[in-house]
Length: 169
Image (cartoon, rainbow, N blue to C red; front, side):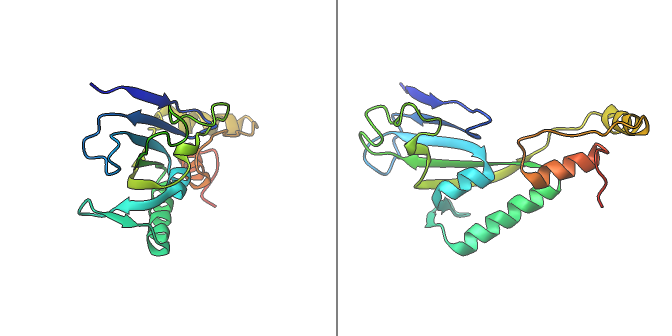
C-alpha cells in the first residue's frame, strides 16, 4: 500500500510534488521518492542529474543545460507551455520526519535541489477559433488588448501572436 504526501500546484510555486512510499527501486535504501512536475525553467534548475536516452542517471553538465534551454525555447516559440518532470530518492528524516520543512514556506526544501530530470514536454492550450477575430474586432473599436499570464515570456508572445493581440514584428 502506498501513502502519499502532496505539495499542491499554485501559480506562486509553479510546481507540484508528491512523495510516494514503498518505491522498491529507490536507490537510497529508504523507499520514499519525491516526484515533481512544474515549469521547466524552474524545475530544471533544481536538477543535478538527468536520465539519458537509455534510462541511466547522468550528472547534469553545462552542455546538457544549454541543450535543455534550447529545447525549452524552441517549444516556447511554437506556443507550447513546457513542463519538466523530475524525481528524487529521499533519505530518512530529510527535511523533517514528513519531508515538509520548512512548514511555513511555499516551496519545501526537499523540492529545491538534487533532483533527477526525467523529461521536458510541451503542451498547448488550443486557442478557440473565435478569439483572433474577436481580438481584431476589439482593436478596430480602438481598444488596446493586454494579456496577463504566468507563462514563459516566449510562450506568451507566441500565443499573443496567434490571438492577434500583437503582431510578429
